[in-house]
Amino acid sequence: MADVLYDRDGTIATITLNRPDARNAYSATMVEEIVGALDRAEADEEVRVVIFTGAGSAFCAGGDLKAMRDRSGMFGGDPIELREKYLRGIQTIPRRFDSFEKPTIAAINGAAVGAGLGLALACDLRISSDRAKFGSTFARVGVIPGDGGAYFLTRVVGFARALELILTARIIDADEALDIDLVHQVVADDEVMDTAGELAAEIAALPPKAVRTAKAALYRSVDRDLETALQITAALQGLIQRTDEHQEAVEALLDSLHD
Image (spheres, rainbow, N blue to C red):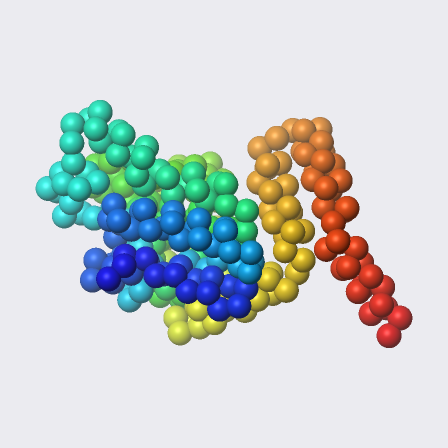
């Protein structure tokens, strides 16, 4: 059975981590399949929004502790080999998210810890179950965030809060995650997928080129000075404002004002 499931319903694709017996901990195969699923969603012109979730009771438990202990699989080899496995393995996920143009939503149905938290943070938006737990727990097993999670955590909750969460390796609940803006919304456990689906549908109903371009503008501007950000948005606006999609949207809005 595949470690990652892919399903499309209309304009929304759902990618499900599918190792429930291992609380959806990463395997080398899962890493490859996550990247492959994103490639598939990117290539499908019908897909406008992607939802990530986990099978079973967890979103993603991060690295496989048994493989860490045994120094096997993605954790095998000498230090140089291990470095290469990170670069060519789990770190391909944040790189792929960084270049992924379509909006992504994490439907966090359970624990998102370690590299699992990094995956949730790589998504653009996060809907959490009220039973979910979160933690940058790498220090508990004597390692550092090597999956890109520190990069995303800093940008989502700020440097000071990210530093505290990483250095203490503490687990926080969904309410605290909401308080520090780690997630956008907390709902009952049985409402996570429905809420994520409603959010995805709301986004998918908008002109897709505009949505993708707005996402690009935000991410490309966030760490830049004002003048650079203005130059980026001017260039992108020049492109998007000459699309048929823009013209049709303006005409539809004007028509609705006359009704």
